[in-house]
Image (cartoon, rainbow, N blue to C red):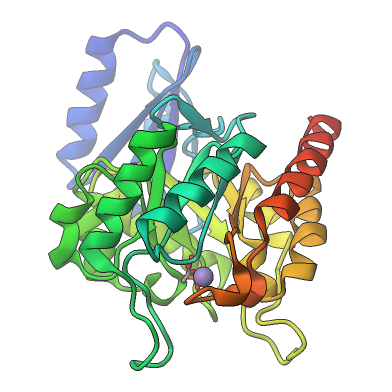
Length: 333
Ligand code: PEP
Ligand code: MN
């Protein structure tokens, strides 16, 4: 349930209403806009007398929110959330171009790719240090050392970095990481989500391989319910019966998520397709569909990549794509 307060309501009146609602065992989420304050009532609202609440002098209107996600819900928060990462903003008209290798492999590799993607216009560097691989015998990532190398690339280029966490026990290693990624395979690792909710780090939350959009938003809700509202949602393709592509890119997710939620939505055409050739057209389609950003795998030598070479663009291909992305972005603004 949400209560929209009238313009001109004083802080004292708002506080008074909040304590009254809290006495009904509800948690209250306050969203302050320029002209309007919205109270989100979280918990068992069955005992709230809607008519009584609506009749209060300071209350403009009261609505039941039927979706199970509350804090991620656009009804709670009509304006787009903008996530700030260093000097970079994501969402609400600010575009994020995240690019870099699937995995950090060496200092030379990550620095070379970081400089190249920055020169082409990327504003965030990606790189996996902890890699969730289907086979336990495959390269598992450089782990802590990989994060150190990402931090060197950040110092060298000034680009903020995004990298995946797999286990909360490694959280200390992420102190200087700008955005923590929760990968598709961990989208419903609820204990991990709750712990990340206690941090104030921006979280890049990827959709699970077989998860619905409502489930994705409920996972965002896990993080938000612990206090961290800095979430970027990511559509990265889902499992279908199609085998030609690695996954099936569900581009309608961008519009659906924008309708349902105020959180920024980015698209990962690399994991969605699994094929470098398909990355540019799907990246452009995602921007045309209204995505707030892209995350793209770029490798200086894709044929020798330790992970996901087949879907990685070369720096030159990325450079060309980024120019096209800028044109589409301008066109749809
Ligand atoms: C990745 O970003 O390298 C990755 C493993 O992505 P996903 O979790 O979407 O498969
Ligand atoms: Mn990858």
